[in-house]
View 1 (tube, rainbow, N blue to C red):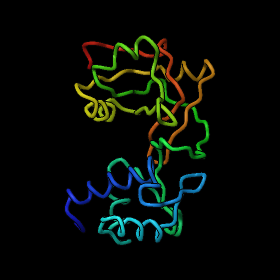
View 2 (view 1 turned 120 degrees about the vertical axis):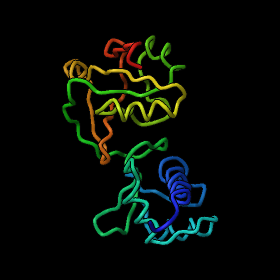
View 3 (view 1 turned 45 degrees about the vertical axis):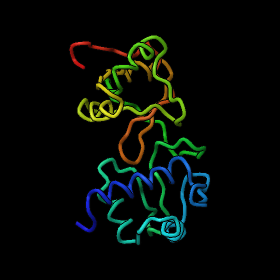
Length: 187
């Protein structure tokens, strides 16, 4: 391993903050699709207390479990694959989802979700998973985890569009409550 897991996590979280939410924090600029120059990123991260070089950055991108970041073909540009709260122009193409997708959340959010649906809030899209295990991991970040089944194919037949990010996260703009199935015995 090139760097300790704790250091990898620390830098990865900082990259998420910078590339998804607040590039201004280190004076970084992203283009309209969320890309930025790698050399510029490294220089600005180092001048803001992060100890990083290209090899460490490449290792973090390659080993990130959630595949949150991606390089362009010659590795001169980098961006977050999805999850932005800042305005960027996504290059996602609409695709047909499987019959069922899953949404992991915390138990405290269930009442609101069942009343109004799943909103994207401050993100560009609602994030969905292709499997229950991933959804459960997402839900654990929000308290006692709950996994909801999303009737994705029925949503598509009713005019809703789905996209897939480069790191295989399913995305949509909103999940109306009538397409959510909650099995209390299934978490």
